[in-house]
Length: 381
Ligand code: NDP
Ligand code: MG
Image 1 (cartoon, rainbow, N blue to C red):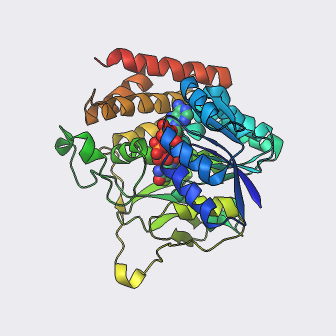
Image 2 (tube, rainbow, N blue to C red; image 1 turned 60 degrees about the vertical axis):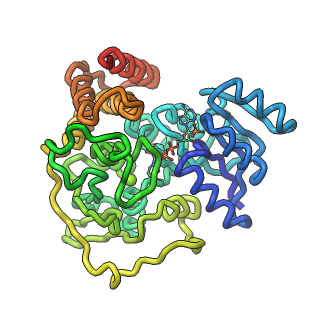
């Protein structure tokens, strides 16, 4: 029986993780969870899964829960996130919180020797070097949940990293795949939220439409697989059936395929190196699909992908700025305060004006993250 801590239990990945735990009661037990502001879902999860510890974003909400669930340990805010992440008897942390707020709890959980199943890509983008260094030091596995990285992890089983020619990340293209840049002027939030293949949280759906999601994933892949940026490429593949591939030196390519269902990579991270049946999972019927399509990525059309490669190559605090500027700009777009194309403009401005700091420690990263968010907010009317 694996004991699980789950950060972001009320989100898209969090709820799907709970589905998996529900389906395999003999394999998994939820011992702690964190959420933001969705108290309704927290109440349901507490009643159903009976965790020992719960953390929410606001103090007022934690007071409400204390009155409703006497006997439950309850925390709030950044400290609560850390407490949920290191909860004493958990074996594995599933980090499905949104944003770089997930960094400190991840580092704490690594120090506490927990296995990390990471969906929270912003953490690896903003401070991949700190996370991977700490994981190495404490002998803690970092298991990818993001579908592309899970695909690569699966394709790598029984292989040697030194034989890799390149990682090929596939990209669906997001909501605006077939539009030119001119056609992006005036697009609405609801159009941007309409992803053709995946049902996900709002922020990552916008990231998919700007292609920043793939950019973040390039940096994520760099850290998870110790792969130089020159050996990571991106291929447009509109069906989202091949979730990513590895090309080896002998030109052989190993890919992982499946219907677009995040429960597969979530469950694989939880059961690794074993596998379990996926209840109500739709099997892939290639004969029905008939054709798969691929095309080259256009860096002029998808500028955010270029920003990410450049920031990743520059290293230091550049990826922190990329991530924080993106988080702030996407939040502003979702609130209707800026246009879709202004997301890229704001990120570009932040990157251009930043003086890179190499080998940043945790405090430096937190300070640059905070400053970037402030600088973005100053530029937004
Ligand atoms: P959602 O927006 O659906 O969920 C985010 C979760 O984080 C919610 O539980 C939310 O709480 C909580 N949360 C947000 N901000 C805070 C905060 N400041 N403090 C505490 N909790 C907070 O996101 P997704 O599930 O879509 O994504 C989660 C992560 O997984 C992201 O990093 C994303 O990039 C990554 N990912 C997601 C995929 C997907 O299919 N959705 C695929 C691959 C990666 P509440 O709702 O209660 O306010
Ligand atoms: Mg992904």
